[in-house]
Image (cartoon, rainbow, N blue to C red; front, side, top):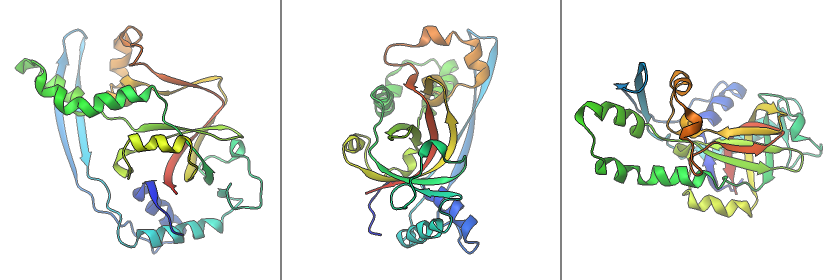
Length: 253
């Protein structure tokens, strides 16, 4: 009951809670602003339209801890059907067999792949990098489109004894710094998640900097020589399968 949240996606919690209790309303304040920049890439026979939406972090209301406690209580009524408690339940659930779209809870440690540190470093120094560039006025739109929208959710790996689990953390809902996450490679935490998919491949790409960080669209990636643009530091993150992909709802201690 006395939880300290490392991460909690309040928007998703209230969305799923409202499915269990129709009286629940989403308790958040948000503000969205959408801007569109257009730019031509001279080396390619196409232009692109960049649409950026900025959303303020959802605010946790003073009642959220109470609401969250009731949400987990409501989930227990679905245990073994749409909810699988791998922490407190008497049933010996196997995470590799959990149904798609079901919610699960485990107690484990997790880690951020070391390869992501370089991406986080770029993100950290981005405000300093942009003013230092000598950008022509005609190219301003292109640089704005690329540099302003470079943001990536943080990939995390959970090495469960039954199956490796992969998810991402939306930084808007993160209550600790990136560097603090290193503590949880050793310290166990409780993780609430929703199952997205199961992947039985031997090698699985979980992060591509041109898709998940710079966010080039599919047409642009097809028309670029992406492989030649990869470097040792700026390249896809690939892990051994099989893998369970999940949506992280909450991490607490």
